[in-house]
Length: 312
Image (cartoon, rainbow, N blue to C red; front, top):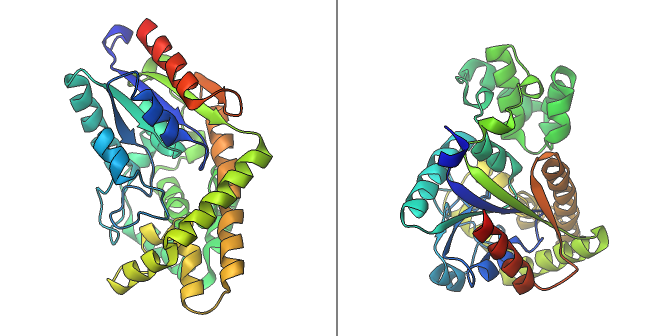
């Protein structure tokens, strides 16, 4: 597919609590945008507070896609996300509106930018079962240690608690004989869209304060009650959806095994660590325009992005 025929897509990426959604909403004052959410937890229905889903007023003001597309009991793959997001992008472009990807899941961005083959390799239930049983017996650190031995580069990119992807990386290695980290990187001319990417960037102290404030707001808004409700409706504790930040940490608190203060601190600390990993991932992405968020207003940045969009 030639460059001139690629659909034009905007993307606003960055760390959690980095102001991505606010910037996208400000952009709607300048361009006829529709937002395609790019968040691996916002796809789940019922996970609202802990995922900082767009508010109903924002959804009424600007169409949002790829939110609430999966039941919390189910698993959801990168391939499923790409299929759904591609359909949304095509439909938005057909309406002569601007598709804007908004989120912090780097793997989703990478899979939308470039063809990804290893991640779509056949599953092997026997191999998966071996590591699932190891997980149940020995915990996530043990499975992650196996990956670190077999594919250190991929292990460095995955948190031990991201057990689904850790096991998937081991499964792909067993099925294909190739490590994720040995995957041939696509070239620029392999890109699936003509994508203009903007990343929000904060100094570390400010970002960490924003994260702490967000965690406090989530707890005050009823995060633990949300988790209790999901569990009471039968969502398994080991479901993929329950591994998200805030949800995984809430369960020991609801079981009486952790104090409120320790739980809030743990969520904040793990969210800060996650933000660091997001920034590491996004710095590897090519063609990203970085936005210093301390300087200027959201409206000023949105005006600049809209002006640049009009020139391409």
